Every structure is written in C-alpha cells, then in structure tokens.
Length: 383
Image (spheres, rainbow, N blue to C red):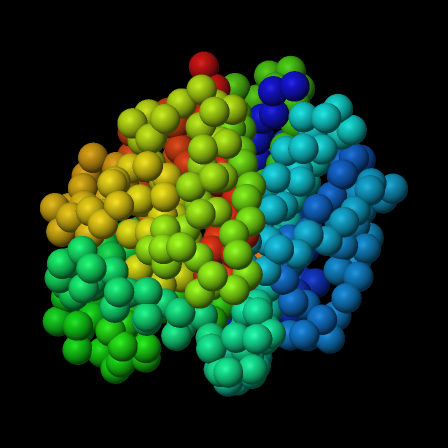
C-alpha cells in the first residue's frame, strides 16, 4: 500500500523551559492541525524517544501523549533506537500504514536534555556505546575524532573540508526559524575553536538540545481525499552494524548507511543520481562525508571534495541539510530523525520558505550511535 505524509510540525529547538510531555503535545497538536485531521482519526500513535527516563525520570510518555492529544483509544508505542529513534519511528509509522493496520498514524519525536549538565547529558548519550568500550572511557566524540583523523590522512583531505560542513550548515540554519542556532560562522572561527577530540573542534559537533517534531502518515487514497499537497514514502530501509566499532573492517565505511540506503533505493526504484535534496545525520561534521559516500552520492574518500566545491550547498548540485542539520538546527535525540522527515516533506510540498530548493525526490538518513543502527527514508512529491 502506498504511504503518504500529509502533515508535519516542529517546535523551536534549543534550550526550552517545557518538559518532554509539553514538547510532545505541542508538536502533536500542530501536526494534527497541519494535516487537517481530528484526534478521532488517529488509529496509531508512535513516540520516538531515547531517554526520557534517564533525562527526566518520566516513562510511559506514549500513554501521556495519547491522553493529552485526545487520540484514545489509538494504539500507542514508544520507539527507542538511540539517536536514530526518530528514523525508527518513521519506519514504524510507515509499516503501520503499509501493512493495513492503520489508516491514520501520528508520529511524534522528542527529547528534553538541556536541564542536565553537559557531563550528565554526555554520560547518558555515551551509554549507547558497547559496555566493553564504555568502561575504557570511549565516547562518541572520541570515535568521531579518531575516524576523522584516519579519514583526513588516508584520503589526503584538508582539515578545511570539515570546517566547510560546519559553515554551510550554520548558514542554512539562519533561514530556519525553528533551529537552535540561527547565525553564520566563518571558516576562521570554525578552525580556531577549541579542540574537543583532535582533529575535531567545537564547531564540528552538534549541541545538546530540547525539542520535538511530528509527521502524519496515511494511505495515498486517503491523502487524496484530504489534500492536494502530500509526499509519498517511496523507499525505506533499516540496517544494523557492529556495536563494537573497532570490529568493522573499515572505520570509514558506515555499513548501516550502505545497506539501509540500498534497501530504500531498491524499494523506490531510484538511485543516488535521482536525489534532489538530502538530510544527513551530521552529529559530527565527519559523518556528513561518511554518509554521502554510504548513500552512493560520492565514491569512498571523495565526499570532502563536494564540500570544497560547494556541491552540497543550498545552491549546489545536491543540497545537503537545508534545515541546518543537527549541527545548527540541534539534536534532541528522539526528535532528530523525525525533524529530518519534516524538512524533506516541506521541501517536497514547497513549504520550506527561504530554505526552499527545487525538489521532487528527497532522502533522510538517521544514524544511531556511531553507525550502530541506521534508517534511510526516501520521499517523493505527489504527482
């Protein structure tokens, strides 16, 4: 069954006074309005969230949201796939409609993080890593630093190429009123910021963020009855790579990205050359390169050239992270993958405002951990 997206919403990302319950409710209510449907229409409700218990001591958030939105007696479920929880929620929501189990499925993703100290938040996020790595103090930033060093040296890539990713995504974020950071940065500022995990510096990392986002899924038949502006989920794939990062044959190849994008392309009957815009999981700038190569847009070891040539800029051959990406928009763990879906949906229906590019086909890649689990989604504009 063809699955359509008919509505989307996203709260302001950043440091919010609201708690997870309020953030989820705001996105959910706005999505219902945007889709033009009532709470009674919703048959399935999925909530993408990684760690509401650890961050806020609040569990059962899917039950709370079902109550707050008035969608009872809809089936509700919390989806946790670490930092790819949002993408996993898209997969679950697509599956619920494609299978015929639901005619109207609401997905809401969110996370409340900023009330914790940086050390506390980092420790919660570090629990994603394998216990054998975690006990030795290995964190996601350290994986990123080691991988970036290896990539730069192996492929003779200049350090400036990573800074260009940060500069590009901050520039895109200026045009996103919901982004956490709406300010441009210079190459000099990016290259001279404090070192976090050599060779990566402060502006190579995304921030700690509060926020939520939502998408409404239905059948294409139902979508046509409701609106003329919708997008189709034409391809989707999910894959899991080794939990222990050093067990991978090549640390510069994200196997989960390769496999999940392959599945999505095959389902959609498309390939990398068909993409008009993409949202990639730039938790660290080096991940933009690894994902560009994983989804087949660039050969291994060459994605940095796209950054240097401006090919991934908003006015380039393939705009990447028009939303500002995790780097500028922010990274509220459970919301990030949903927000990626919101951005490509808005690009396809012409609702991206000053960020708008010409797009009929779009891709979103949401990564859990350091490539431990990945969901790739392809959407196409309705004909």
